[in-house]
Length: 363
Image 1: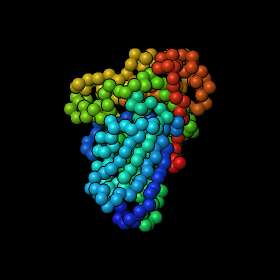
Image 2: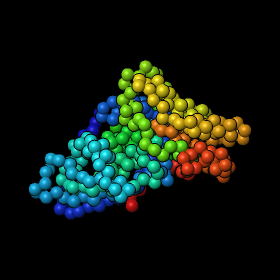
Image 3: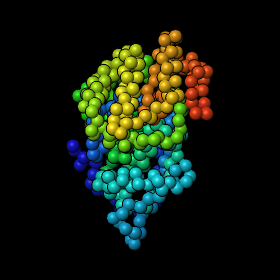
Image 4: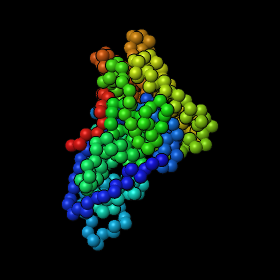
C-alpha cells in the first residue's frame, strides 16, 4: 500500500491562528462492510449513498503552540453541541495518533474542536462517518494553508478520505457523493482500501436524487458499538462467506445502478441489510441491534409495496433505525405512507427526510 503520497513534503512554519468550518454528511451503505483489519482496512468493498440533511458541522480553531508547549504531544479540546465531551476524547486522540505521520502539523498547534450534528448521535446514522470526515476536511484546509505548492482538489478529497478512514472506516465515504465506493474491487476503477472513490460510471436517472427517510426507532446509544461488532468478525463462523457475498453484491449493484434495474436494487439492498444483522445474530457473543418496531416498519414496507406496487425499500445500518429508500417521483405518496403508518413506530413519531447529496461543504 502506497501511503507515502500523503506525507507532506514542505510545510511553512506559521505563527498565525487558523479557523476552518466544514459541513460533512453521513452516508448509508447499500453494500455493507462489516469486518476489518488494522489499520482500518476493510475485509470487503462497500458502496454508499452520500446523504445531505444528516450532517455534522465542525469548526477547528488552530493556535500555534508556544516554545514552552510540548511539540511531541497532541493538544486538543473537544466540544459537542456546546458541551465539553471528555468521553469522546479517547477516540479522537487515537485518530490523531494514527495520522500524525501524515499530518505533522497536529503536533505544532493547540486545537479546539467544536461539532454539532443535525441528527441524534450514536443511534445508527453513522455519526462517526460525518464527524471524522469533518475533522479530516478541517485538517486539509490547514494543510492547504501551510503548503507552498498548489494542492489539487482531487488530492485534497483523496487525502481527506484517507485520513477520515483512520478514524472511522465509513467516514472515507462521506467526503464526496452521490455514490462512493471504499475497498479494492475489480469492477471499480481506481478503487482502494485506503480511501473512498466516487462511483466511476454513469448512474441511471431512476437512481438520481434518490430519497431516504430515516425512521428514528431508537435515538439512544447503541448497546454494542460498531467497533466491537467489527472485531467479532475475526472468529466469526460465516465471515469468509459474508466477505465473498458482499464483493459479489458490489459487482451486481454496479450493473444495477447503471442499467436502472430497480427491482433488483430493492432485492439486493434489503438482502444486504439483513445479512449485516445476521452477522450480529450469529457472532459470539451474539447481539441484536434491531428493536421490535424495526421489524414492524420492515413488515409495513413489504405490505405497502405488495399492495401498491411502490418501489420503496429499506436498509439498516448498525442500529435499530430504518432507512426507507425510494425514487423521487414517489415522494408525495411515500411521505404520506410514512406519516400515516410508519411514524407511529418511531420514537416520538420522529423521522428525518433526507436525499442523496454531493459530500463535504466548506462554510
